[in-house]
Length: 244
Ligand SMILES: [Cu+2]
Image 1: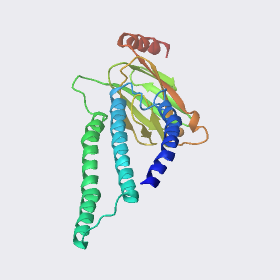
Image 2 (image 1 turned 135 degrees about the horizontal axis):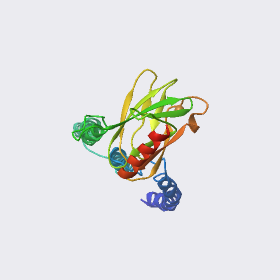
Image 3 (image 1 turned 90 degrees about the vertical axis):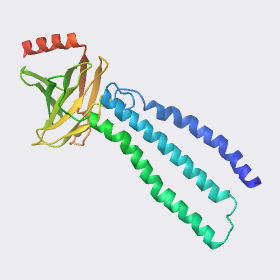
Image 4 (image 1 turned 120 degrees about the horizontal axis):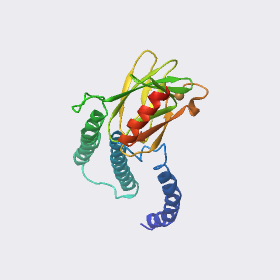
């Protein structure tokens, strides 16, 4: 017992010191233009919520494992006859090796499937959805609005509060379209079109980044998504089509 208390006395200040350094550093990653934990639309909010659930569950599992490990290291030895010990071992194998993973996967799917379903570009009941075509090039983004003649480079404009479908493809190698505050990433593959549905709930300018290594200037392959209030978007559309 004396030895264990000594270990505790030595570990506690060290652990709190490590936590003091690590906590602000890790929380610093929760904000900013490329943070998936600072969502501004339903798709990104679903991913962020799922991430926090998984993080919380992972922390609980970590605490349980550390608790069991400490118990095994410093706890009293189990005594009893062989049969009784074998029964205890079997309970741990069935509970920890079979039931716990099944329960964890079931909970994950129960939350994950509805969130994933909302990200699919399914037909909308409320009419037509705005389509924007984006083609990846080494190392820039070609953006066009079918039917309007608008052609842009490295910038996308969308209306706020409604979903839009981005039809993504590539002219050369595989790229990946990613606006972390609005939703998940989707690959852009030559000869194929993938559709990504995004929605911004706040009028703002969001930053996007290619998320698939595509050559020398991959890290600089960035773009912006500007979400306009509905009236402003109509005005932007008229102005942009007139100037093209
Ligand atoms: Cu890239």
